[in-house]
Amino acid sequence: GENVEQHPSTLSVQEGDSAVIKCTYSDSASNYFPWYKQELGKRPQLIIDIRSNVGEKKDQRIAVTLNKTAKHFSLHITETQPEDSAVYFCAASDYGGSQGNLIFGKGTKLSVKP
Amino acid sequence: KAGVTQTPRYLIKTRGQQVTLSCSPISGHRSVSWYQQTPGQGLQFLFEYFSETQRNKGNFPGRFSGRQFSNSRSEMNVSTLELGDSALYLCASSSSGGASGELFFGEGSRLTVL
Image 1 (spheres, helix red, strand yellow):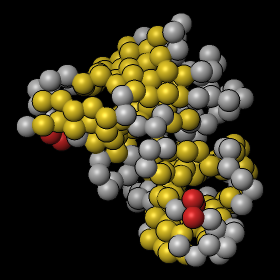
Image 2 (cartoon, helix red, strand yellow; image 1 turned 60 degrees about the vertical axis):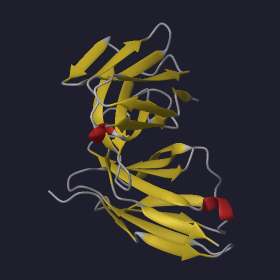
Image 3 (cartoon, rainbow over the protein chains, first blue to last red; image 1 turned 180 degrees about the vertical axis):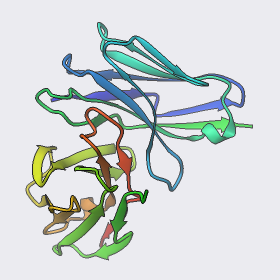
Image 4 (cartoon, rainbow over the protein chains, first blue to last red; image 1 turned 30 degrees about the vertical axis):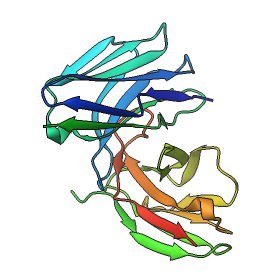
């Protein structure tokens, strides 16, 4: 089955710096890659997603890149702010394939220091 | 539009007991997925129900079961509780399934097994 590895597990940056979180997946059939943000004590919420027919997607300060050949995708946050502090989860799925469910990485705790 | 509602929010059980958790999805959503969240393990997929049918199942023992009713509300049951079952149980609803679109999570049911 699908396996998603996420690195690093913790990341600390200064306000204004960039943050990058990387994930690798094992199932080459996976074609949908969302990122969820979970603030302390809150529920996870989708912040951005990308499908396998696209190599990069941006939404204001966040962007996601996908390399299907290498089977990895990354989340990039620019000009980080204290409110970006949270746990970020990547996920992968092969909609319509053998699994059809989301498999999450173990999360990255991002701390943005003012 | 009301969000995903989970009950109870907190519960304490002892080893060997069983527990039933409930999830009411967003109106119109036919897919309900369940995840177990523990520190360091991220979000582990339990199962997904779509129109009252279990569509996918994760790698959890048979003590974990679920069902979905005709109004899309879902329940999950854990029998013969073990200490390791202590976790935050999150349910998430979506219109077509998390493998292809956004999951909307509830606030979770925090289970403590003593």
